[in-house]
Image 1 (cartoon, rainbow, N blue to C red):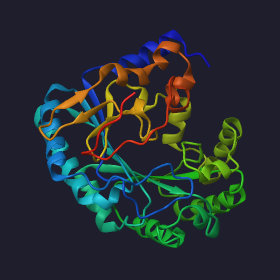
Image 2: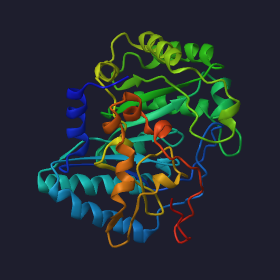
Image 3: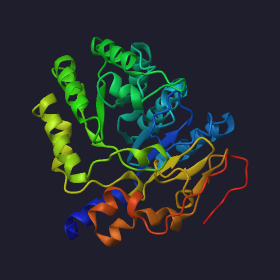
Image 4: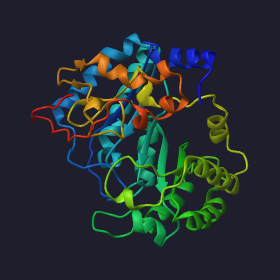
Length: 346
């Protein structure tokens, strides 16, 4: 679908303004889950202290020149490093308040294994307000794909944690992200009925069903994935069964075009080894290795390589803006070495 010139111009103005920085950070790429369709290799551990210090210096130098700032966490499982998440989010909030910069609420995905009321409260106080928890179905169906490293299922504890959080007064937004594929639809319908009963009246909880995509890895190749059109139809039906009107989902549906963070020139992703990337799904692709954060706080960026992810603003195609992972030219798969090893480039 071709995006109109006026919409394209408006979206580009927001995505390219130097007065905003969108920062995604992964403090570790380790995870206590081994979801069967995951594309991550789990090779990178926690961000070393010198790089974490450099990350703090980077925002100290960058934020004073901005008008707005956003922070999004990524993993592995981000909550394995929840204390540093809270500390860094507070640091960014303090800098923004000091320099009159508008900071959006920070967001994080989490498998919810460690999402206790105590950790939730600490993160909310720090400025992390939106949490996204993925669910693959009800009971045993979920446990077939979202497993611990040991192979044990995870649904019972996740659901128990969600019920406990419902009883807290914390002003969080929690997105229940339902992963859809051809073999779990009946189970997801059963789960939505349970979610509607337990969380539908609580406006802090929101339902966001999405289709599982092939972002790499061997296991996903054997799954029966849904077409985009079928996935959108099923997702809309499930949302209505949870809550007829959800302001967050209504706003998303009404938007003219959804621009992925990877396509935005003013958004970067920093990995635990200091690698600067654009896309959080294309972790092992050389075209996604666009620079380095140094312990001094300096960001060394290959601007042309980074801007190549914004090619959708040239083609005007909605698919290139919504998810450049699949349509970006010159895609080659490699393995990115850990920090300290020789770096491979295109």
